[in-house]
Length: 356
Figure 1 (cartoon, rainbow, N blue to C red):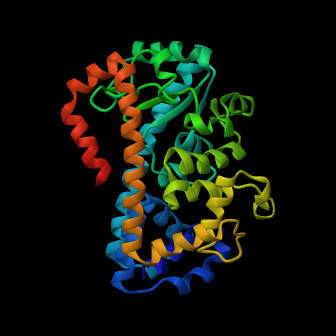
Figure 2: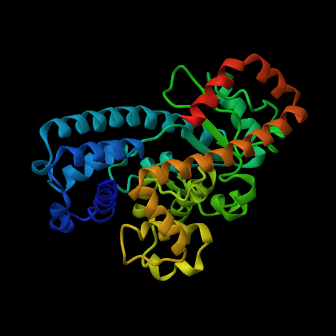
């Protein structure tokens, strides 16, 4: 049943961008409570409930879903829309501030998507932080500007990072998050888009060279948004190691993927080919360059016990990697040691959340 539901969601997202495909999806909708419960569960876990509701409205499928389910999705959709409107106001403030002060910057990820507005992203795209790529020589200036305008660090969530930009450079791809009581989202000022080992795949100078201006806001080119969506999931969020897909990432990928990409996949990085190999579990027409990874992923979504064991194994590996890196940081950064001692409750919470 789970794989059926996931196949349905994939088809819903993948094929219903064009209302002409409406009739192909209707037979896939099963009118039983278990199906709808899993639809909500998977949609919630992947943060795509607003996208699901938006697709239902665009393709006039309301009559095929229970009224209470539609009402629930409508509320989620409205809450997300309200939040994103506030977030967009914050983007406009940040954009004006950086433009006026000649900060070389580019909005990334969800912020870029709602600025570009290729679809009703303000209502459908769920966004956490505002990610902004900043030119290296403007990092310190941009951080200072934000702090002068009411933003500050939140040591309760970012105790592991230092305030010294030169030290942060060796630790992470972005500065400590900055928050303001006047705005809804935390701001991450990035020097790089990917973890250090894979930063060569999407170097900052390449993004700046290909940036574009949409209504006075700087965002990456469409091909870079597509690449960043995949690389971010595969490496920053460990998707390639987990051998799993994020449907939230999938939405961005499908809206921005180049024409005839399936014929050109062999020219792309292994992580892109891996991403599309897993998608072939849902669409047999997609090329498969990693058949074993595809088989394992199909087992993950068919058999819950395999999925649980696989995720547990990968979490163990990640935990050991994080633990070793933090031990190294413990000896190399005095400020990290100070923050560690002052935030033992938060450390415990982070460990619990990691294993949750």
